[in-house]
Image (cartoon, rainbow, N blue to C red; front, side, top):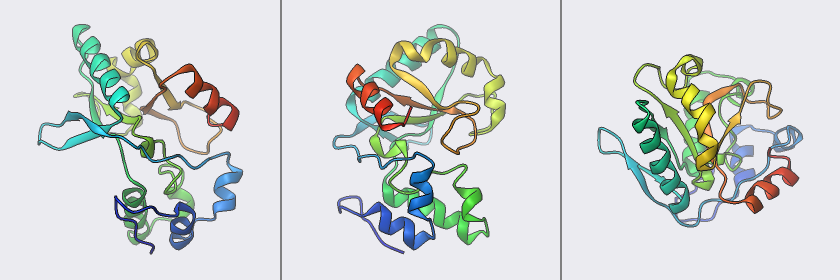
Length: 192
């Protein structure tokens, strides 16, 4: 498989091909390559001291949203934020090595280069009363709070029920939209 260290420019399409992912099929789903974040900062740290990186603006928005939720008695926390192309490839390779079919994998993981996590603006969230990245999250007060309030902080749910991307419904996956121009660019590209 192609190797792509964090500091090295890599070709996501070549990495996809090495993983057995048909790039033409990916792009036929309307997915696009996302640029890697140019600036990252620690946006939060989990209970074990593991840092989560986001763009500075997304990190500030995350902290404001988390504080507002807490003020309303709702606890939300990060389980994933920035993810490199190389890390995305590792996640897919691990599922392939465990015997999963690539078609099944691509309903829950974006191909390397095609993940919003590469931008440093996407987050996967959970709360104390839901297992991580499970549909049960949608039944929590945290998810209800996010659906009612996340937009005030610039976050939108990327994969709602019936989304056209080919990904399953992910009530835990939200992406920060930095500006109206950013929203416009995503709309004309077909990402939203």
